[in-house]
Length: 188
Ligand SMILES: CC(C)(COP(=O)(O)OP(=O)(O)OC[C@H]1O[C@@H](n2cnc3c(N)ncnc32)[C@H](O)[C@@H]1OP(=O)(O)O)[C@@H](O)C(=O)NCCC(=O)NCCS
Image 1 (tube, rainbow, N blue to C red):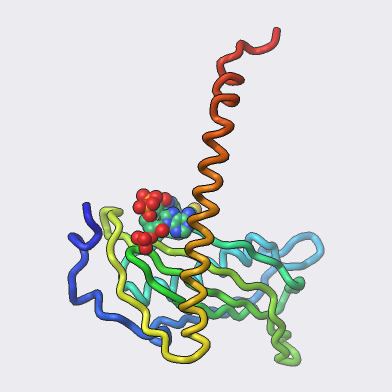
Image 2 (image 1 turned 90 degrees about the vertical axis):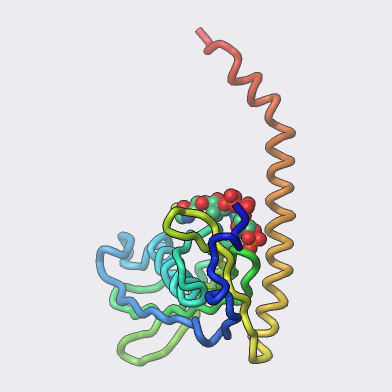
């Protein structure tokens, strides 16, 4: 089914970046940490996913699935008791998907000093209750920074698509070998 068939036209009015920007603050508790008392990378990725989904949800006002999270560097450790501040913005909307940028800082509770700890770009796909993909409204980038993110998001999408096609090609190239290996009887 075409995504436009299940999307009411009224929900496709373009929206500004500011209208869906989101923020989440978490305190690092013992359950979130490794044996050194630092925040687990997977936990931080979860916070990033949640904060990204909030902006995507506010932009499209429908259910979301995470389609991808780009490369992520953990720049510095986050310690037990630190506050983690995450901010997200929809950089650009395509047909049924949106690229969302999320940036995370740690705030030392005693001093209030903010340090950048990680950033990531995620792609969310909008779906309805039945899991069918639905169209999303366009994004209106207003500031110079938003316009830069908007332009870059298209380049990143092209890069993701090229990378996806390359991996598919690579998989196809290795498929006959894998099939042959699978067909061989197990060694006695
Ligand atoms: C993401 C998902 C909906 C894509 O479905 P699909 O049938 O492969 O859809 P298509 O290939 O037609 O692509 C649909 C849209 O998703 C985008 N997309 C699909 N796979 C993507 C990926 N890996 N990275 C970024 N975008 C992706 C496409 O660019 C397209 O965007 P557009 O409509 O804006 O042009 C599907 O793969 C899915 O449900 N995945 C599981 C999601 C999930 O459970 N997330 C939680 C992870 S634990």
